[in-house]
Length: 298
Figure (cartoon, one colour):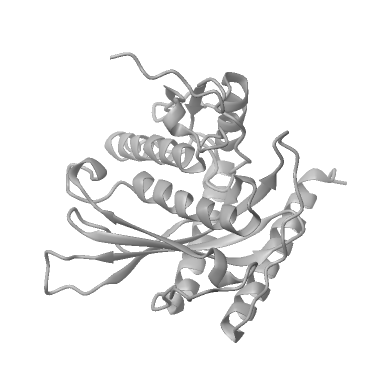
């Protein structure tokens, strides 16, 4: 059966590639035109190395891969990156090949240690729950917070009955996008995502609740915290648990694709004010890191 034609509001589907690269190289996602989609994937992936474990995934971006504004879902690209990573890691374990460059191993070790420390630091928030508020005021955390409930089926899982990481990542990006759109009431796109911390595995048959809430806003960006809780409804012996968490950064765009000012978040409770300050710290750290990469080295 031929795929349905794209709607007038959506750009034509394009070809996008997913290749192995650094996990923190997540660039803004542009409309799903062929050239733009390829550029977005290239910026998120990195150079293809001639090693036995190198992999490249290609697929056509279809209308259902885009949001209502015609932009490719960030979660779609995250899922493709995760698929490529799963294939690479499986090939590496089966072949037991070493690293092609010593520098790559050292850089990967530093990222691993940093992410391991971050996972340990976020464990204290594993009991935190996003509670709904009646009649919230605009621009508050409660006004834009959103949740999605999903029953994990066989198509979401690996051969061993565990949820694909990419499936969880795509659902998390969808919820973060809803939060961002509710807050600014404009077209939004994923700008970046930090390391997604998978605290525990999710099995087939679980009901997962993906909750998102705004934590920080700058003049042109929004940080959304996304929490994933799993409820093993078919297993009475196991209680609901925190499965994953991450911070997504979104930007607001006009119909012409130009950045728009973001409405400033109004934190109300002490916890919201603390999360705002923590988010501000992360924002300043990322900004300083980007500036250091742009500035020429002496």
